[in-house]
Image (cartoon, rainbow, N blue to C red; front, side):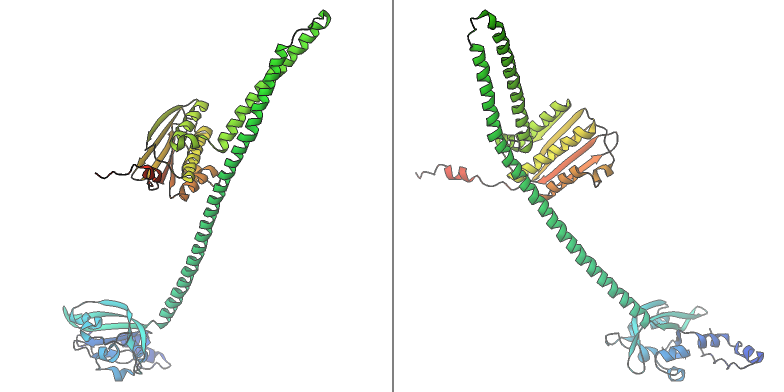
Length: 424
């Protein structure tokens, strides 16, 4: 462009005939400015308009002749979108020739002749002539429709996010209710197990013991009967007595087996060792019972305050999780050694069961059919804990329960029974 930024002449009107078309193309720059849909204007070093195309003049509500020689910032860029004054020194358009800085901006407005404004995207580039800045060329476009589309898109996005938030909250509420229901069901289940175990122990256990005593009494009486003096019936009576005693002894063995099975069922329903020896003793007993039945080697390590008593629901949850961990080892691991580590650290209980078995892929423990793992995790989550599983084919499996320990309560009984201080 020429150094003094003289406004280009308008293209001659196109009439029929090749000659008129050729005349129009004698000024291609004027033809381009007249035909473009975007606004284009140029300013000199004084900020005054030296040319503007028809599209740009129409956008700001003027005729091209009205704009020439006008300060473009004062004419159309004088205020922000909220009506606040826009200082000319802050105008990026003028910075193009003041500081030689090009800019592209789509967050401002231009003002029309009637006082209305429209969102605009504009770019301002300095014009150089022999390394000297002579002014700037500005292109701009009305982005009202684009803003409407963006606003509509943002509105739709906000509505979608609101719906997603509402649905997420509903799902979280439903999940929390489901977990509370599961915890309540588990509590009811443990209470029912305890009740059944006590009834089986009190009723069936006592009945079996009484039956065994009666069978023993009958066997003893048969052995104490005096032999019949009649030689003819002596052999027959002794034979019958021997068969009856054999039957009594067989019945006694069956009753003993029944007593053992009832004890096992009672233990499965409600391990009484929890009541007699507490959680820590019950965990060690369960581990040793397990390795004895599976013929595996046990490595046992427990570093906890064994005088610490956990609330009964938490103790039962820890015990059931431990049982499930050992059950997984027995069913799937094919291990030779089971390493149990129980430690209390920084207010947390960490219980891990590690085996040297075949291991498994991680997805096996995340499967929708891994009900045992899901049960362990739900039990732990109910008390603010978690169950982590580390396993890989060929290198065994490590299951770890981490659960926050409750704050120890003062021993009210000990405080009440403490001897009073005697004043001197």
